Amino acid sequence: MKRNLFVTLLFLLCSSGLMYGDPVPSAQISDPTERLAIQRAERIAGSSYIYDFRTGLGQIAMAYPNRLILIDPDALVGADEYTQMFALISEMGHEKMGHTVYQEEIEGIGQPWLRPQMVLQADRFAVSAMLDNGLKKEKILEMATALLQNSPEDPAHPAGSVRISAIRQAIGLGSSGGSITRKGNSGDTGETEQPPREPPVMESGATAHDVISQVISAAADGFQSIRGKKLSADAGESAAYAAAINYPGAVKSTVFTGSRGVAAYVSYTLYDGADGDKATDAYNRCLRDVSEVVASWPVTNTKDDATPPSMKSTFQSPEGGLRIVVSVNASTARSTVRINFRTGEGQ
Image (cartoon, rainbow, N blue to C red; front, side, top):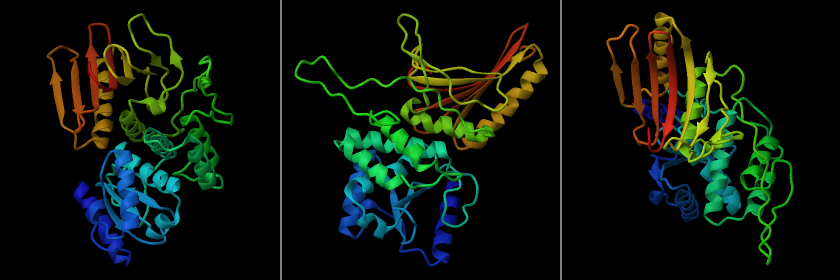
């Protein structure tokens, strides 16, 4: 399916007279200025991609399925260092977090899968990667303010002010301003600790496909990008965090956590009751929801002979970093259907 999407996109580009040539890895980009900027961004992001070029995109870069990134060469060369890195790495972040997984035909030059929460996640990914590689907080904020302050909200993007606020938080300045307190010679002060964030909430009207896709993308950073308030933890267990995203029709959404030997997980209870038929229906519905999003992932199914039965389907990401478990656990009194997203040990 991905191959078909890739071919469709290339056909559309070519048929519109927009193709500069076949997509190439960064090492084969002929212009040295473009090549050096893109290769630096790849090193910071920790991944490599393939590239095609066209002018008039309206932005420096756009990510597509199959690790393809479309570049506007004029916008890239005309931007300063920090703007180049932020634009390139945030698009690379979309791919790394699974945002570019798309099951329908792409029409024209656009990113129909893109949602505001994905943009915020990609922004945070870019900022974190830039900081980890020695770029300066103050210059990142200055760049983001100049780049985004007049950006309007649309169905795919938050307003520029929202993105700037999220970037301020990501670099430790808080959402509405303030300065960083650094350690002095006495060593008695440090960076000002920010108050815990309220859990971000999935936009109203989100479909199961939206929620599953967002949780998968958040798994790329151990769910840190969608963690909310820190909860108390039992002795010997790491901290747990309030659930943030509601699954449509769920009875209960539990927590993103680092406890019980698992790096992080989120769980949704889809059904909790004594009716075996309703439990089976909920399980099958949930299984369809997940399968639509991760159709290419290997899956293992198990079932016992009880009445009602206990069933489990385990989807494993090809990279091995995320496991999605859909299960119905039945007893003589009740059945509970859950979907769990887990990363790390203890899966």
